[in-house]
Length: 63
Image (spheres, rainbow, N blue to C red):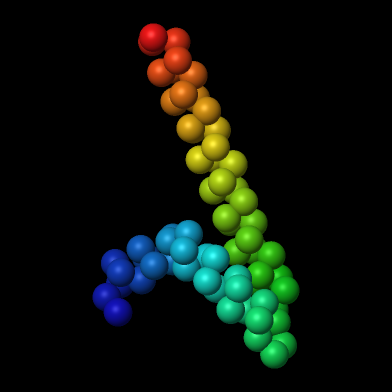
């Protein structure tokens, strides 16, 4: 895979979720890796939720 595509794949939230589930379902799971990938997803959810709330507030005030 080209270098730029590896970077895109590394920051893809779907890859984080798939990696966490795949690792958790393996015979000898690396729970640190699972927790790390799940924490990435949680952080993204918090940031996205905050941005969505702010956007809704701005929209609501413009009415």
